[in-house]
Amino acid sequence: MKQLRHITALTAVVCLSIVSGCETSSSQLSAAQQLQSPASSDAPLHNISWTMHLNLPVPDDAEMVRLVENKFNVNLDIWDLENNKYEALLDMKLAQGEIPDLFRIRQPQDLLKYQQQGLLAEIPEEMLKQYAPSIMKAIKENAPAYQNAGKIDGKYYGIPVINPTNIYRIPVVYRKDWLDKLGLPVPETLSDFEKVIYAFANEDPDGNGMKDTYGLSREGMNVVFGAFGQIVFADQLYFGVKNEKLVIGALEPEMKQALHYLRKWYADGVIDPEFVTGENKGGYKHLSHAFINGKIGMTSMGNYYHWIQNGDYWVMKDQGSANGEEIPVEATFNVKELTAGNPQARIVFGQPFRGPEGKRGSKAYDMLMSFTAIGADAAKEPGKMETILQILDDVSANPDLDEYTSMKYGIKGTHWTWAGDSKEDVIVLPPYDTMFNYQNTIGANLGMTVPLIPKERREQWASTLGLDQDGIYNALEVATPSLIDNGAELIKLKNKAYVAFITGEKPLEDFDRFVQEFMRAGGKEVLREANDWYSQHAVKGRNHV
Image (cartoon, rainbow, N blue to C red; front, side, top):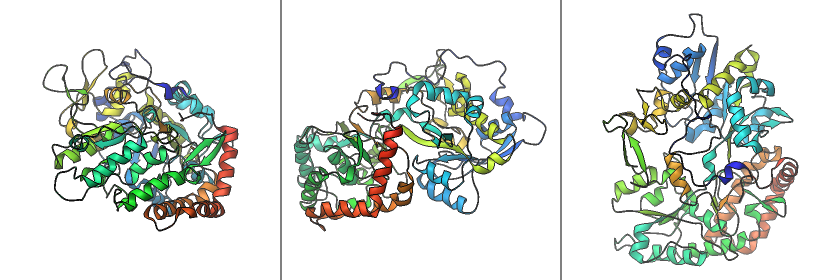
């Protein structure tokens, strides 16, 4: 099991450096200087199209983009590809013959697809080591099991993006005020959970005198499946490990037991009848509107940082004092929306409840979050690939603490400052401290995530919640040719069958027939190729508990 899976309680408040004890290099130009004058009076060396994580568009005159352009004497064209619609928007560009030079591959399974389509450049390993040394050092030291994850036929086509905060699984969330009103504890077993959701549905937990609440919806079902050792509802096929081989979780016989419960609960009116369309009704994809609007009392949607309540931990803010002051953190995302409509509402995290055989777990995102690649056309222009790698290394993993922090938060003194001489806490300055995703607005966070040990206050808080335990990860983190060809249709087939079983449209006796149909539709080849890959490349236990 790789090192990042064993991170326990964290002691530092914030550690943003890659190499401890770094000092600002006197040879570096200040941010203000770099914004005022280009690195050279010559014409830009390269025009570089760039894709990144975007929740808001990056303006053409964004400060941090200009800073990078001047530093490296290039023009950056940041593609406006909203994260919620990233693949669809990217595919439209690709269909028009446009290939980004810095190519973000959001879903790891898509690396092989894009390589097969001839859209990616091979990145020579020696070039990576020479021009992106800090990124490669961070991967080698902190995530060695993933060093070769971006290779196809022994050649690099993608730099693995390893997210260290994915050691924390998706939380299991309940309406605490509902539990308190009904005199119920947070459930620890499947039997306990059943009592809770029936009470949520039948005992008027919101006190409005109407029977209009339910126990759970689609995302909560994954915790039920987790009580039998698998995950079913996800945007990819979820593979588990049994007897040293990969299996497709949705096809395993114990899922019939889980479906027996869900089918009964649905018939009894305990499950939200709109579970088929999901809990999110548009906008930011990690919001559970069914939970926010008081329709359900339990969910497992969104990550831990989408469920922060007022005062869960303390943060540094600019309150007019020289070094800032500590104040309670404010509610975020789901909790913010929930309490805006119902100020008395409270939430509580529970551990995944145990099933009949003691199994438990909730969905977890793989440590291998995505890939960063270079578009095929970039390799045709001499020196362009080297320049892209230099920029990527600088904006992602600069070993200078001040420079690294500026690449993340913006210009020091304008967007952020240190809270004291120790350089442990960052204070985001007004008005940016209250702006949604201001980093996109100023063009910060241009780079990729590197696997540094998470030590910020938010992650300190997360580490106290037990979220680094009981995560169920996808045991297949890459794509195979047959998965590319058949994966989308197999997911549709699986989802359609599960909905039919839960709603009673199909009898559970048809489960084995569904498995046979799935295998005939390409599942057999997908499973064979997955096990071929697993036997040759997988580090046993990687990403799994």
